[in-house]
Structure formats: structure tokens, C-alpha cells
Length: 291
Image (cartoon, rainbow, N blue to C red; front, top):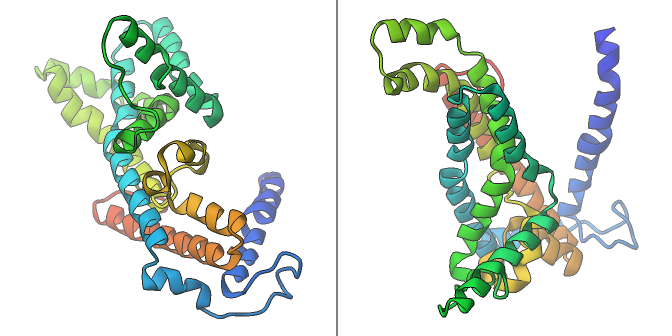
């Protein structure tokens, strides 16, 4: 009976995740929409030439993708952990529920609304700059400034998703045996030592798992968020692999090259996940799957 209950989900997975993988054949064809996938002529590995030869637009998109991923992993990834630890330290359950609800509500906002909100606060005519002008101070150029664009993206991602990711760490904290803290307190362990020797080891498994998944998704940094702000800062600062596929494929008509980029990105992601999972096994963690 339980197996039968999985069939609808399995059907959706096959229809919308695995069946579309057949479309990767476009990467080896000079795809023309009016001819269709199967009638378009084969070109072999020609679509991979820009990747191999180091096309400047592709390299710019790749470097931007890696840099944004690195900054967001270092800066944004620890924020949900710190929020979970701070919220877990609160005594009042009612306060916890209120704060948790406030923190994860931004997750349900679309990127259109998030970008618009940041524009209203940080834009040239936004709340902050209007306040600075009224005070006789010079405005701060943030929205549309390529030099701070990565910092802006990271702030947006943190504000939108940190509260939602915090739920996973709160769930992991709830599984830690309270008797461990009681025994540590009896032995004279300070709050800091309890955090270091009990809390953080209890979070290690979920942290490793999320880092592995983050690594596998490292070449995808949010298409909608980037495409909404690309015109303001230019392609040099805001072109990533996902927007490169869109601009070069759908907008530019180079369907085959864009499919080649997407295929390579997917293969690299799988390799990174498997490699990171193997490293997790060496450190005694289950990772995405057990040995």
C-alpha cells in the first residue's frame, strides 16, 4: 500500500524531471524550433566549442557564477545556523513562534517583490537616500552599482531565505537529547562549552548534507533574481550561467550552445555532489546517501 502511494509522486518525477532530460540531445544538434528536436541536423560537439575555446562571454558568466556562489556560501549559509541557535536559546515558546513566523515569511515572496522592496529602500529615490538628502548628506549609490552588486545579491538571498532554512536547523536542534545539556551543566560546563561540544556536533550532519547539496547547485545562483537586475548593472557584473543560457539561447537563438552549457553544468553538479558525498563518508557522515 505504501508503494502504491508513491506512484503519483513517481509519475510526476518521471514526467517533469527525467523525461525532459531527453531534450539534452539539442546540445548535439543545430536545433531549429520549426524543425523540431528530431529533425534538426546533428553537429556533434560543435556546440561545445565556446566552452572549450574559452569564449569571453561564457568565461565571464562562469567566473561571476563561481564568485557569487563562494560569497553566498561563506556569508549567507551560516546565517540560518546562527538564527536557529539564537532562537533556540529563547525561553518563551510564544516568542519563538512569533519570531520564527516573522523570519520565514519573506521566503514566500516572489523575487519580483523582493527586488522591488530593495529598490524602494536602497534605490536612488528610495527611503534611505531620500532621508540622506533631507539631512544634507550625499546619497549612497547601491542599486545599479556593479561594485556592490554581489553584496546586494547576498543581502537579498539572506533576507529572503535565511528564516526558511533556519527551520531545518531548529528541527535538528530539537533532536538533541536534553539530558546531555543537563549532564554537562552538572559537570560545570559553561554555555559556550555546551555549544561547542553538544550543540554544534548535533548539527554537523545536517550542515554537511546542506553543504553537499549547495555544492551540487553551485553553478545555479538564481535566474529570476539576476535577470530582474541585470539591466541595471550590465552583463559584465550580472551575467551568470543561467542568464547566459537564456540570453544566448532563447533571446539569441543559439539553442544548441545553450543546451550544451546546461548539460555541462548538470554533469559538473552531479560530479561535485558525488565527490562531496564521498568526502563526507570519510569523515563519518552519511551525506546524501549512505555507503
